[in-house]
Length: 154
Ligand SMILES: [Fe+2]
Image: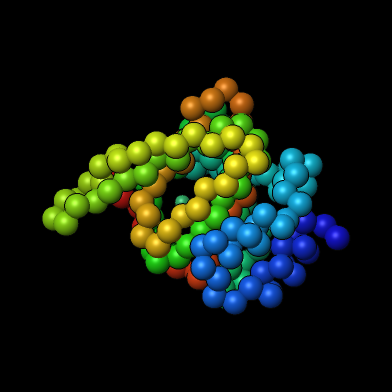
């Protein structure tokens, strides 16, 4: 069974997961470089990175992100959604921000570096940006639930 069919089947059986159940589910996928390579897209201007929605249902969105060296996503949140990210290639630098009441701009609070095979879980309301500070392309696989609009910050 191909990767997307397997993903579809696993998510169909997942109802209102908490963050750890979501991670367990993503861990069950055969998230190899070979499968994911077929789903990697090149940056489409004005975006500086590739973003391929590989599955979208009424409850889940699964995305493959391709950050070329030196690129980063905008600072954003995922509303009240939870998410799980698996790094597939390169080094993912995850910058986490906090926004104090009354402030308009988020402030950097921590930076984590994640290697292939590692997972990053995203809790409700988390503000972050993902960067590739390495010299190899960074490829990651993401699942979010439930579906909510993201918000970008200045
Ligand atoms: Fe994100």
